[in-house]
Length: 227
Image (cartoon, rainbow, N blue to C red; front, side):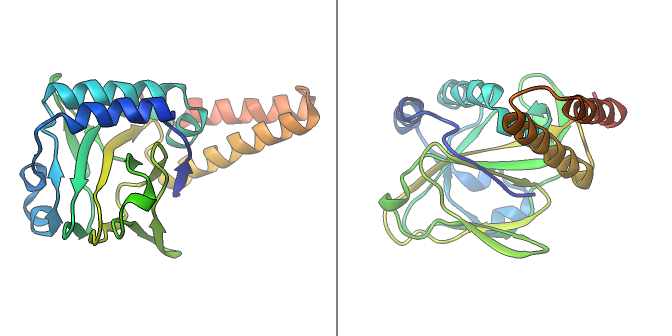
């Protein structure tokens, strides 16, 4: 399941995040990658324990908390504090799969990375190349979204970032552990939730059938959620 979440951040929030990260010092992105990923990765990154990453990340976490589509699709249990990267001319990230388990900084626990997210912070007309390409059973999906918009996709997907040929691409990226580990079940629950919302809007009321479907959704979530 690959889902675009448009306008996660407002234009004002995008400007705030960009202002914070633009004033920060960047490091080689390979320092946070595993051995295999480090050979594929050519970008810059904010230190994950730096004050700028925490401050900008808090803006994103608040936006995620209020966004119905993200919560419906991800059914989040834990969200790793957002990280930030930058691709200048000649930089890229060759095909790779994200690690399955991530350490949560500062609290001494680990989390399963079920879903990956890329939040674009640069208008697409400001750079050439830099597309996120995610592969699944239906083929390769090329993604280049407006600043403030985000894509959510399975962390086990093979994906890459194409080489930048003009300008620079700034973004935030992070991982989510879902309450529903199984991707197929999580997708079915998402489809059911969106269907219920659509029917409610068309009926303008909580008809008996809508209430029954809502009960099915909540009882499935109750049955399979891992907390």
